Length: 599
Image: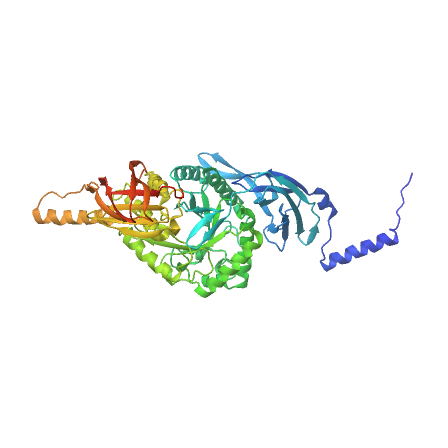
């Protein structure tokens, strides 16, 4: 048998001509080969604390899977109640850590794939339809649906002065746990989150810094994160470790140094710098230059798609200490509002937002964020320094929560010889809570001070004291009666909390003792005293104001451990009564709960 060539039929010739014309004009076509190859795979059905993760297999990566102009893969998700949301799929590569000659590195595992993450806010059927265009070609993607048996943990929100999660008050007991050494993220964050969680810590402030888990920098150039997908994978692990230990994450997206030429300057190596082929020579133009905004929003789209569905995402923090950049404040506000609207397109979970300043917080524009983040490094008595900060910020932002998001005795480090027990840390946590911030101060120096000295445990006493209470909405007050102490209180309709601290039981008080001893030694020519035990008090009578007359359970506790020192029933014929405070060392806490009141 012989084969002969036949001319195409008229209809086929028309189809070929149309196809050729569409190709020449750059019009996308439906790729049946892609449609046949694209299949869905469930990677993780999700849980209360973890997102559902799906893989879309058989869809090509394209020339740049991070640039929506080259690869735009967008999903419409329909929830069981009919609510619809949009998010982008993101390009994912799995990794494993390997060790060669005592050197740890990461190596890719398997092939890359498109992934979709979503948070199942309700139990029931979820339906997914995807629109995909890869390098100008539209690709037909099969619809997908699945049954969720578990609803994700409730949303974080603000309620005037404080935070909620679902219907319950949420007190962010936080630490800065911002980064680790590369390739140590899993071991270090497991170590840190486990220890912190045991003490009651429920929020960690984590940075996407260029030296650790940032996904775009000099080694990537702008708009292609391939070389840093292992860092994105490391951040996935940090979220998972947080889920395991009940630690939620304030994710800091930008650090000031990346766009600063003066403070922790990194702009010289930034891919946005025109010296490195970027679009701007002035870092202040990052928030106004159209090309910079384009690349930033592309990165933000990827971040929102990959981590926006994490149930333990507490908030997006746009900047760390943006005051150290030359960016104009009005232009910054516009940029934040634009970024907020953009991120909500691809992570429609109403995630809280903030930004932070290291000084002059009361002079800033906080209108574009959900809560205020203040940084303060000062070795003076936190009762005084934080009191000044609180009054200043509440005068201009009276209706939003405010947190001391970074705190320490100095910006150059903590002296383990001067303060080995974390006295300044301890005071800052109690002071911030009782002055009116409604949450402990979030300490810095987690890796070279807090963790090596196991100071996480300093959180335990305060965590137990405020358990179950909406301290952000409790009324701050002060009581009197015990010599050389300050007694701060918080009250609501059913509870009175108290913290009594001797004046000398703070870092600056201890410094004064050392100075007095040095002067005495010079004057008397006697040996210099170098050891100063914590000050003690015999206790005594303290005048307090209860929420109302009635019967109360009054409990005194050790301020550090939360261990009960004494507990008794108290009958109050009027609001103002006098209570007997037992002897204590340094400081002591108490709690009065009205019988029949809310727990």
